[in-house]
Length: 289
Image 1 (tube, rainbow, N blue to C red):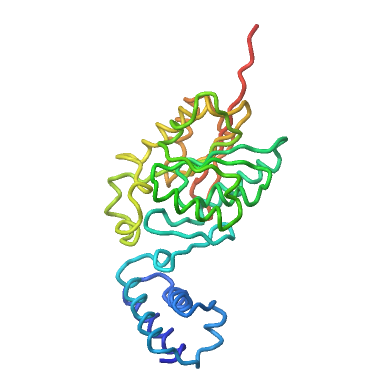
Image 2: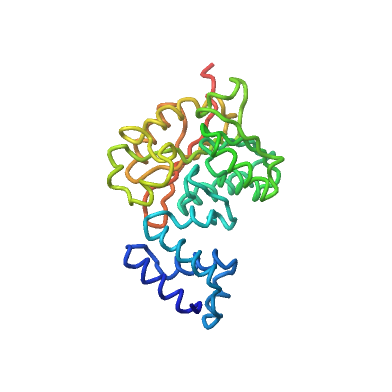
């Protein structure tokens, strides 16, 4: 089989299976099987593929056609310009989460002193690691309830040279921290899909990604209702909370934040115009005396 023939065959198989961007997926799987980048594949379409590699490639295509996410097959996903190892133990990083990271970096770079931050529900570590990489003066904590997720996050931190500035802690939200510990930034992309929406999710998400990282309770807001009231005691005066939200949830999360005496400064939209990232701040109360 020539590379060009393999590409066309795989794209047709994936298209029949309803895979989005079948040719791109075919190229990524072929590149993974051969250890090549996409440019090399496209420029060497007349080169034959060894039989063993061809058979391996066909098995990869069959896995993806059956619904298994591409990034679990290749074991990697790019986020904020960095490659991250991913397995079924962690959520596959999404581009919309980059909005939270970009805003956090912007705020930290304006911060008067080295920023201390915590990433709650760290998963693959993509938020904490991207921030630590972009803001070398920062120090972070990454919290997750899953031991398997924390192992992946640690591995990614070592890969990107920031493991010495991030502590990885198994815990439930902020409950693992001593009462007196304060941060400049608290960040989270928590589980926010309502359980009732499970059947409406794409099969590759519903059947393969970790439900612990997807579902936030019956309404999808339960994690926010637990997390946000515990934020002010762990923020320094003027400290920031940045949380990602699902479609249609932003105003309800605003109410939860304001009930916790946080000042909501902005809600950022994603590229589809969906309110995606809430930015709130702890404001010092002034005495009336």
